[in-house]
Length: 281
Image (cartoon, helix red, strand yellow):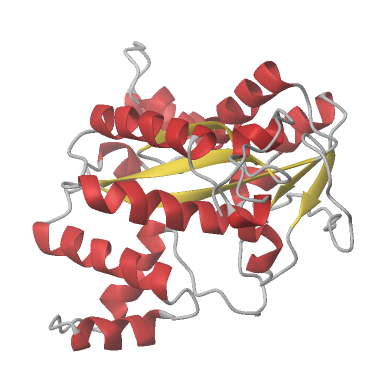
């Protein structure tokens, strides 16, 4: 829809009503101007984001109760609307957790019982909501599964497929193509444009099972680290500030932040097969 809107709002001499007819878009959509979020909604979205990270299995009912415990009485309908706007869902087994686009092909999960023991064997990606002082953005990141290294990332104010493709193309250009690429079943990743990019580089496509958030658990852990170690501490005010801050954080994450599961090495050290430094007892 974002591409259609862009075509509607061009300076083309063709009347806007005719452009709407050709693009099969309602005129009310073309003339609609979204209202900015109020301060209360932004505050609630920030709290909902924190609660979701702490209790990812909470749905809208439990998040409503948690908000009430924190002194914010909100009805469930509003919580559900804000969660939908943020792209958040409770993480537990259920049917059709991530909705693929109509007609999009779903690929099997290829990582079950697979021994992942080298860089560029498996890459993974996901999208998360990033709260800011006024408003919010979406972050997509490409991660090497073996080393946990963040290979590329992008931020945007819309959930756009092109955002994901740009991050993917940058990662491939800089580091070569992986053997397998794993995603969830979201519309951005099941689209022909995204899967076509993977196929063009002979990359095997793997997708999480329905309700199987744990299939992409390393990226979920990355979101927790990004938010608690940077975003919540900084309260970024503008997209430019956010991009500058995330550039700084991912540099730290890749080069300085050691992981216990990586034998206390950094993602860079594992990805580039560097020798682990001698550590004090």
